[in-house]
Length: 169
Image 1: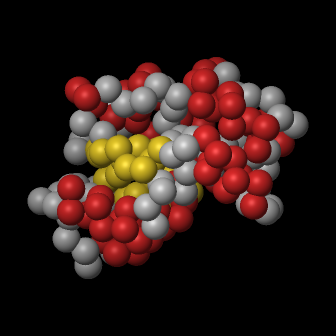
Image 2: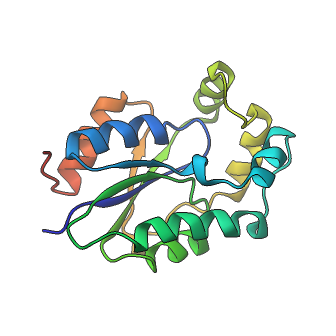
């Protein structure tokens, strides 16, 4: 089996980073915080409460795709990336073979509460509505695993490992 390559996706506040970091640690592969690859222009837009456009996200998606395409056959990676639209996910799929998506979703009130408690992040809670409006839930033919964030992060990690038949390091 090739090393696991996963995108943990969903709107802001769904726990992509928390689940992604824990999963990467369990699998013994690196974790890439997708938000860290946003160009400064994107960060400034989001910090000002301006939703990103497809054009704004283009360089960001290219940066993530470049990291994925640079992997050797035996290298795995877990990436947190909102991947809100199918065209974004398709773009990332073209970067590497055997890429799996895990869609974390939850109740609007839970997402809003998490964003309200988050400190030190440029993404304001006011952008949640635009992200939910932009989100295209993965279609069945995409094969994404969809998990409800009402479950604790460790349980979500266990679900992912079980569903994708991953062996941790």
